[in-house]
Structure formats: structure tokens, C-alpha cells
Image (cartoon, rainbow, N blue to C red; front, side, top):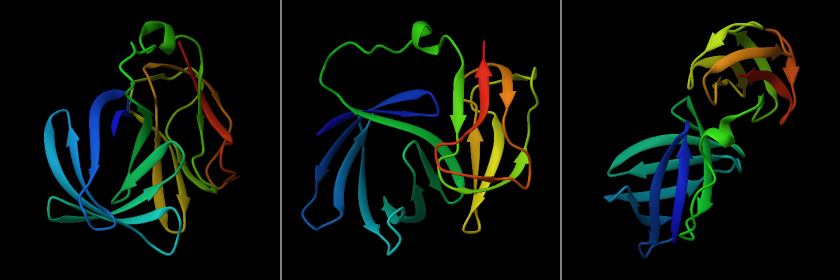
Length: 164
């Protein structure tokens, strides 16, 4: 099956094929083939990943993947061969950065009016002793900060808004 995966704003062509055993896959990313074994742990959002013989702990939320504690904004869509609608028009307007999971805000690295770069860590949320960096989805200026350190957040709660 072919997909387009957008990781921290960069698009990758991904093809996934089952490789026999349950959880075993052959994954091609932009033409480079990898051997993957993926096992879901007892917690529904935590996985053990063996990628080309190297082991990683991976946590997943709706729009972010944490690999060994480092967060990546991720979107995946089927590659159906149609032109993409991304680009300048998709980047226009404010972007709301939302908490991917319920947790505790441990740091806020931006204030309203601050210029930020795409991929810059803006807010850190901790859940179950794992910290997730919420990164700016694009360059712009911070329009609004809705949280402060020590505040509990719910999944999907807007924590910060990045505008033009």
C-alpha cells in the first residue's frame, strides 16, 4: 500500500508491504527499503519498533509520533496519484497547536508576538513520565499562548496559535 507521510512538514513517499510474520513489514521510504518489526505493547499507544535491526520505543497519538522521547508531527494519507493540495495556500492563516495527549505542561518556550521557525519546540507536555515537544508546524509569529507551566491539558486542547 502506498502512502504520503508528512513528518514535521516534509513529505515522504512510503510503501508498506507485509513481510510474512504478524508485525513484520518491508517499508520503502523515498525508494530506500527498510525491514520493520512493530509490536504494540499493553498500552494501546506505545509500540516496540525494530527498524533494520535497531530497537526503538515509539509512542503514537493522532498527529504525533514520539521516538525515544523525541516528537515528530505526522500526517499520513493514501497516495492515490492525485495532485497534493499542500503549499502556500495550505500554510496561510493561523495554525492551532493542540495537545496530542492529556498531560501536564512543563515548559512554554514562546510568548505572543515571538517569531518562530517551522519545527521549533514551543511547548513541552509530559504524560506518564514521557515528555513531548510540541513543535511549530510552520514559520510565523505566535498569535496566542493558551497554557502555562504546571497546567493540566486535555487531548486536543489548543495550547498555542501560530499566525503569519
